[in-house]
Length: 469
Length: 134
Image 1 (tube, rainbow over the protein chains, first blue to last red):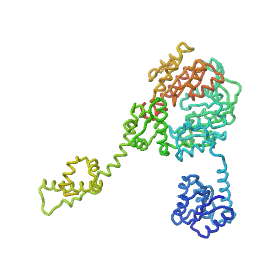
Image 2 (cartoon, helix red, strand yellow):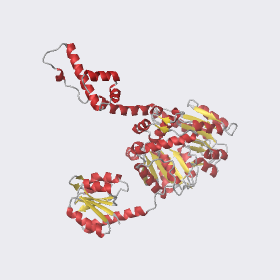
Image 3 (cartoon, one colour):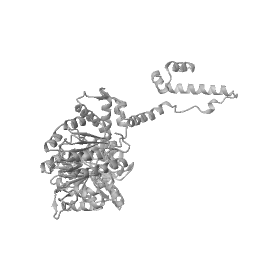
Image 4 (cartoon, rainbow over the protein chains, first blue to last red):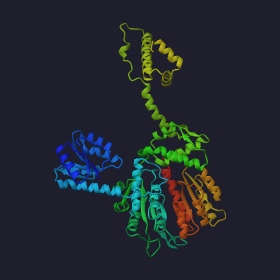
């Protein structure tokens, strides 16, 4: 029995849909606003949400991202106005499972619901993630969990996979994990570093060569494609593959046959292709530097890895595991971290992602030496600076009074001498500042001294001078 | 970025390996002739992006590198193999090398690839982030 949530401001339609859902043997909840719908989603677990677009407190499409973020996020069926093809397109692009045009017949409304419920049932009945080995992929945030779920799906099949993500996000690690969890795990995982391959060597490295094929070819040698026979061929930085080689490689992908340099007959290789890139291949296709047909071929399954900024919840676990590994490697006592250390690593933006984080933690570990606790001053300078800057921008607000006295406050009926005028102004500013300082710190003198930079005797003196408490 | 080389002294083509190391000597590099010293250095090498060029003498060296405490981590490995037997190739790929060959002119190919990597590093970062210090 599935649970359906109906969010529509039309009470009559809500009643009709509710009766329909009941007839199908499922449970329902009906609400009439976005707010109440969202509240229901937060308090219960639903399989399907039927969501109207035009609601009194907003557009239903705006709720879809929040629905997708929920654990076991339900399938969303959008109810759009009739003759609104744009609305339907928007709905699907936003992640909706399906859409229903209003007004619709009962059958037209029932079918998407039945399909969505059936899909959910099959999802639930499916065995849990097939991922067995993932010990090197650390993290339990939603983003990395989603990526691992995608990986486990890809591992069950043999389709070509394209892994995308910023530098340092672990594309090769994911590729290896995919291989280790696939039916090809017992065969080789062969890496081709497309960025490092000189154009003059690509062909012979990939396809191999015959004896005498060129000067220095003293014997026949198999290429990497042959090495990957039965296993996985991993093309790292596939965006760096020269255009001329892309055409040849496309043919290899299509037919799994190739000719070694200098060979007269073709050879075969049964490999599964996994590629990776941090470049925008679609943009490269537009620019004419990457073949469209090759892109289609390599992207049968696409897996996007999140940046570290998108999975900040994993930072602590990543740091902890790294430190544990280092302690084990160097037979060192387990090290801890100060709260400031954790704040610093969480504050930094990590443009180099996990690789940069691991390098920084390793450096901190080394710099700390025998110290049992890691502090911010053990970290590389750029990370310390970023943490300090983020701290200063907060403190600055606390230090400067929100309002400074207006100049009119200093005016008096009699024109004072310049010195007297300045002294009176200074007095007023002083009083104003100390009063504000005491208010902000609830009279805590220690805190007041820290923020203002005044010594305790000086602070007490100013309090007494201006008759403050 | 740092290069490290390994080959057994007096092994086949050790002269060619020495020539290769010399041709790349303007890059920070270190030479090892025993696996023990290589393993020890790798264990305590905590910083820097590494490229390792290893001339493997026999299958036992490969097995030792795979099963022993050799902390290659993210090191980009270039392996020059003693033969092209299926088992040798299989074991070699367990180290996830960037280059694998048993040809006699492999050293020249390795030099070409490393020159390209070094150029990429200077231009905008191949292993390192731009402006990342070792």
